[in-house]
Amino acid sequence: MEKREALYAGKAKSVYLTDDPDRLVLHFRDDTSAFDGQRVESLARKGMVNNTFNAFIMGKLQAAGIPTHFDSQLSDTECVVKRLDMIPVECVVRNIAAGGLVKRLGVEEGSELNPPTFELFLKNDALHDPMINESLAETFGWATPEQLARMKTLTFQVNDVLKRLFLDGGMLLVDYKLEFGVFKGEIVLGDEFSPDGCRLWDAKTREKMDKDRFRQGLGGVIEAYEEVGRRIGIDFG
Ligand code: ATP
Ligand code: TYD
Image (cartoon, rainbow, N blue to C red; front, side, top):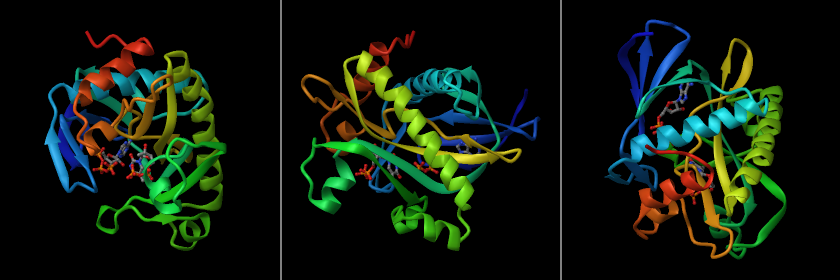
């Protein structure tokens, strides 16, 4: 497998073509962004930490029968993935109220959500990733009802696997965002799962161990990501 020219540079990752039309290389950069890219900083070791973290989680999800795009790790900061036709809809599950939900509905941060909620957002930075619903996604052709149903099922399956994994490490999986795409007609989990796209709290102290440390200027961002990883058995070398 040979890495070829860059296809796309996102806010945190760069995507490269390969000599295989069905495979891409994802390069996890040290760039960290928040507030729709209005704040960007480079955090040393972040690319390596998130690439290692994501590879571990994708392995766990694949082992649990969830189809993922992950193929193999290529280097400290790169992995090989299946090339998906990405669906521009982000799926968010929440177990505990935080972030946007607290702002939008005025509920208290930290309240348990039973049953967990499921939300859809349009992946569109210029519009600040607005919240959408199944009807809008169908009407505007972002995803079919069948695709949305499958994405919802898979997103909750991920919750079952990861809530347990993090709880075993003494952490609460507060919420997370997933992106899906289509590969040879099948809905497949794409993008990444790392502390950049989820909220994780220490189960006892409720200390934030995710990207909220960056958003809220709490410091110790990458140290927290590494601590999360260590607690679930990741060796960052
Ligand atoms: P955001 O931070 O909101 O996710 P972004 O586009 O800036 O947006 P990056 O993670 O920097 O995000 O960029 C990675 C890009 O690669 C994303 O647009 C993502 O949808 C896309 N992508 C991820 N996995 C795949 C895949 N398997 N096939 C094709 N594109 C993918
Ligand atoms: P949410 O609380 O709606 O937004 P914000 O983090 O901006 O307050 O996000 C819920 C979870 O999903 C949180 O862990 C962050 C993640 N997420 C992303 O990583 N990217 C996104 O574009 C969205 C909508 C959510």
